[in-house]
Length: 331
Length: 159
Image (cartoon, rainbow over all chains, first blue to last red; front, side):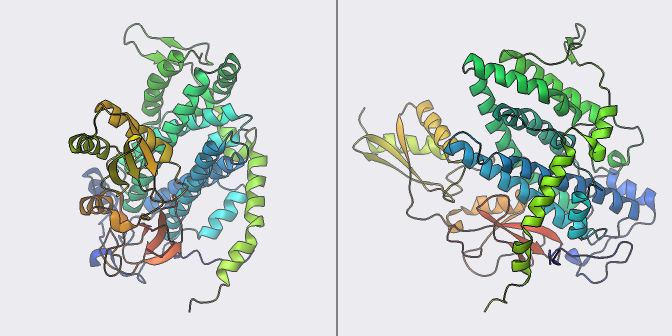
């Protein structure tokens, strides 16, 4: 594997970052963790040149790395559908969405690498060797075009909801800035997914049936995307990397999507689903989180193929990286 | 229906307010996508300049323009023009300010080097020719250490 100059600043973990010019010539420091947490609680935003506590740096890094990996794996899934999408317009959309996801991964990997814990290449190798993780929804096979629509409509919406919740109060400046743009673009994907879903919902019986099958396959993974209930001592919440509890996000998602799907004449694949007569809210069956944990350890139904596809994509593009690394200096 | 100046102005006002699908806070006039509203043999025609050929948002913009015109009481024809070419220079000053402050997206100024929208310094380094969308390239600001997206022109000239 040729060495690649990814450009993003790489430092060794733990070292003081003295070799960079400071943002507005200020490097903020904190007395201790209490002082730092007080800063975060009062809405403070941490910048790369600040002397942030090491556990915070690690937590932000892990969170952004997971997001970057997920965008990257999502981009590869989307790419698979460029040749298969029906019609020129859908192909254009699939192309643009692939560009979006890979572009988001590119920005996120830059910010993650800058935190000085792993270089970008190390992150890629860890992902392709199955040592790091990506979101549960990219561990399943996308069987049909309506599956792809279900991903765009149900899964992208869940991802968007969790990104919006992170953005709202995110304490790490560069990440928050990327999220602002990611959210705008994912909103466009969701609108597109909704439009395609409606087309199937009010199309022929066969189309409606196909869409229902895909909803049956993707409902649970989408609802699981938010993760199990947040622990009371969740450091991501305490450090304002996330701003809402997983169960609250999931509940809001259920309240929005159950009525939408029912209104389109679909059923929800959850026999225990019921409307609470007291508060009028939809309640879903309790979720067995064991399969999700297995999935997140790269042991999901399609994990092995997804990772090996990504590895092939990476290896097949080696000549491009080599060409970029060895290109003659501009004249 | 008679097409007079007043009708054209009403259509222009209505369609100028159409939001961009990827920057919902900005409208197509601020982004320089709306070129003109004219009368031709077939009726009222709205000329739009795509920021980039092959932009996937065009169908959405077209639909929204038709809807906005209809809401104002007019049926129009939408035409995407390949000339004049869109350049970042077409973005209005208030939209520039908004993109820099809200989205940290830089626009090449009409003169001089592009400042980082986060820290204002002008040492942006190239990272990739295109970013998440074809109309933006990716830079790195070594001063404030943020990845910065810069709106590029479709001629591919480095923004």
